[in-house]
Image 1: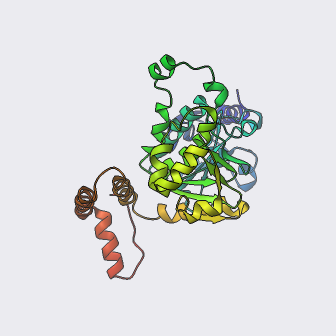
Image 2 (image 1 turned 135 degrees about the vertical axis):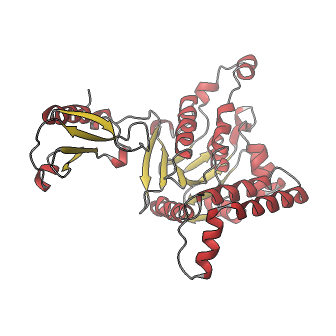
Image 3 (image 1 turned 30 degrees about the horizontal axis):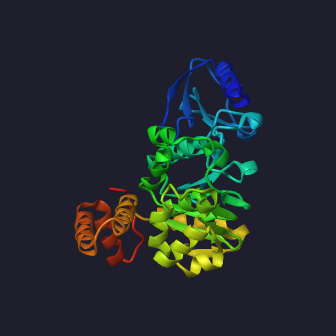
Length: 346
């Protein structure tokens, strides 16, 4: 049993209490319990509350007979583990950012392999992103790696001995498409290498910010194969046919500055400022109506899937749809009244 769990059990035992869920958890491990005391409990003060490393304890009720115990590891999403056991995810680090705790920061964490995108990592990433996508309190996601590498590509050792029958039968790389299906906006914050699958993963995101030393490339041709997760399809849409052909057929890399010039990335920042800048943009996105942001994302993505005429018809339908939303009315009313809107996601 972890230290947090042991401490929680000890607090319950001391109070002689029964438990009932107080509020809906944000994550399966984020729990807040209301402890209805069956015995009289001593009054708590600030000193008592500081006694526990991972818990906040207070006494409530007119008769001071209700103990409120709150798990308090917000940066770890209240994972029930101690420092040695803090491995909720095998390949990822997840944190909540922003003044209003409305931005999820997801970091790829295979440093020894330069964040090579093995099957386990991509399955875990898909699961985590899908969980965050359902969290009403999160409005935007930032996806990043390490300073040295966003992701150096797919895991070559994992693929090396695969056969045609195996990759076709198992639907190899099919799970990667889950990233592009997330409804909430994702900002890729790219430092270091974004090569092969790493470059493809960044292009699945909605906005790409790069550190000054970032490098992008599709070097699969050097390995005797071609990009398999959207490199031949998304890259031409970002940078045009000629540059995409050059990158795919030669395997050459481009630096962050050139990536910015040709439209692959939105902005370039010093490496030590990249995450802060990405979170800042994510906070601004998260401050808007969640449902309208998702509709806007869908409308822009549709531009890459259809003709201009059909895209314009789709945009018009989505625009008209917003007039059935409370947030559209609130936004326009706030503008007329010269105040800040209070969006509810409805």
